[in-house]
Amino acid sequence: MAGGADPTRVVLVGFMACGKTTVGESLARRLGWTLVDMDAEIERAAGLSVAAIFQSRGEAFFREEERRLALALQERDRVVVAAGGGAFATPATRETLRRGAATVWLRCDLRIVLDRVRFDGSRPLAPDRETIGRLFAEREPAYRLADLTVDASRRSPEAVAREIADNLFASNAAAVDAGGRPDR
Ligand code: S3P
Image (cartoon, helix red, strand yellow):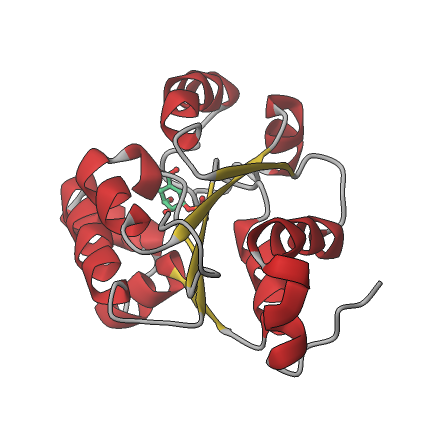
């Protein structure tokens, strides 16, 4: 993250089901910015769900789409990006997401992830509890590379968003300037 000035792009990273999208919605609302959900963008561009993309085109295709989207996002300001759980664990995509942005790891207990994930096929890399446990441990070192870590385990999305805004923006001024409500 560039030192000094307030960031103009915030990227939320972390494991599946840690609340990146819901926290992202709350943070974007607070800042008066736009939320970009990477999975949703990729689904829209492909006209297919993430599960269908994995099935018909494979994980490598999906990772390439993530990388290309990360590059395109470098042109965007005043956006909160909810990254898919694997994006920040992929070195080239991680470096692209980091450039010019503040990155935030939503850290969440494995137990909470296991409670939240539905084993319904919508998350192709979460077929069972064992795979989730393995991926969770493998990816933690990558998520640690984010600029800021917040605990997202047992708190409301609003509380997590507020902590992020308080940490990244001087006196939460961006929210006030943008007409958002510094609700506290
Ligand atoms: C993935 C996480 C998913 C989605 C895809 C792969 C991963 O996003 O990008 O299923 O590799 O962890 P969420 O973190 O939003 O579930």
